Image: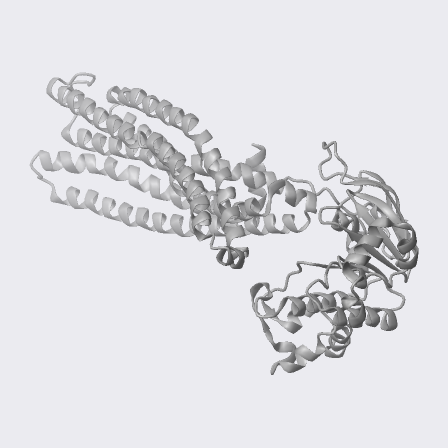
Length: 589
């Protein structure tokens, strides 16, 4: 019921079409069940010799009129049901997407990107189709069942008991199939996440796949997941295959029973008064009601199958819609960041609240506003996790991170993140133009402001070389620009935010040392009040920073200026000697 209530909220704006579909179905079913009732006297009149042709035309006219109205009801029912289900799917997809935008990294990690994509596409499509079927077949089925059974009982109550045997047989059979099939579909849709993840990894890393000739390996990996889905779907379909034989067995058994008993009634007047015998016309209409009742069960079974498939999808959608973001702005949040000062006060962090291993251990750092901090460490030492705390992309488990003299948890998230610009090593450019990508930093930025940011990021000359300048097209993922150009465009985009703190997470790794030096000089000369946090693998990128932190295994093992670390830190000395001992890179600057 919780799932149904949550999903019902997303019918907002389409309840009118839902009600319209139900009204149309009621009209359609009402007319369909009345037609056999009008057929009884017409057949009896013909069977008696058709002495009064006017009566025959009278009944025929009513039947034609009811058929036309029924047809219109069916058309309107389909029209309204299609509109309501499409709108429901749109609202559901939009609601999920908006919800995901509020997720923290922790929430996204919990579901995984591929799983969220599956839920936004396949799962919503399943639920949308099931809802459309519910509006038409699942509502029509029970309604037809009740009305046809009522009319059949009016026609001949003595025969109607046959349905009291047939309907429970089919009902129990469908419930049994549902119980057996549902766990299989749960397994299938969870495996869809793995399938999408395999496709995502392959397409994102297609250049690596081809350069290492790993196409056969990727095909085999995809094939295993695909075959697993095939096996489970085949297993589920084998169980669902019992649905049709069960319906046909019930239909044919019921028709045989009614044929025998109906013929017996006509021949012996059993269950009927002599003055009111059971007629051929009543038997004919009873057969029609029998088909209507059993076909309504067929409709219900078809909808039943779709609901079984959609049930797991609805559960997966519900999980996303009811997930609470692990990060949120507090009440009475601060709406201004005073300056770019940063303070880590005995900070420890682990990715999982239930985990036992910290990835950051007792971090203490003080970075004055307008100063620079360099961070050096081996891969996997949690450098990126550390700087993520500044923009509150993760929350600390112990200790406190302060920006502008205030705990980051006390700020409005949008205000904080507008004041902290992050440029990652693997940044993303979106399909569009250079201008549209730079506008992510400031949608109201003028072309002059864009040019200034690009000059600091040392990418203005490349933009000027394009015939379209800032309107040069960018393909999906920025595949039509080099790695260095992509990083510099991302730096320019970050600068347009005019942040108080700029975090560069190894974001000049694809840039030569000379250009790297020009970028750092541009920060110092043109943006002196901006605090800079620079993660780098090259000593040259951070040696001019006011402070340099050496991180290993989530701990700060050394902290000081370049000159201080050369005297006190063996690790820094070794890195410096290995990179600059020969003088190559050092002389290049």
